[in-house]
Amino acid sequence: MSTEWKLILEVKSSSKQNTDSLSAALITDCDVKHNGDSFSIEIVENKAKDLRAMWNTRVRGLIAVDSLVNMIDNLIPSEDS
Image (cartoon, rainbow, N blue to C red; front, side, top):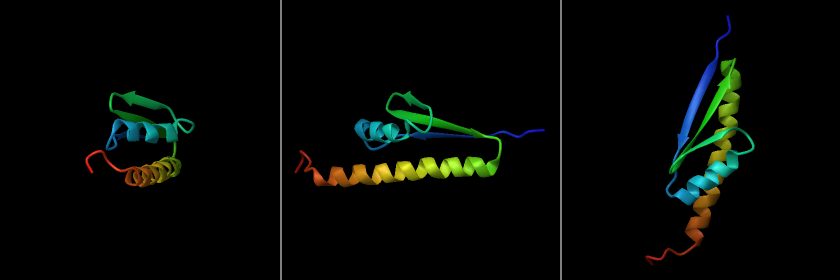
């Protein structure tokens, strides 16, 4: 008997532009489903340890892009200033 492990992640950032940047970072790694102002990914693996590895890879990519986007956002003066 084979067990299938599945994880679904829905992502929504501080702006649509930032959400699109995060989505673009994953486009070559997995199928990205756009849901208006958010997106989701689904990871399915037969073994929990493989699911964990795939999860870690995706999340590390999202963290790296989110950090970069936040740094760029902080460099650009806001219109409110």
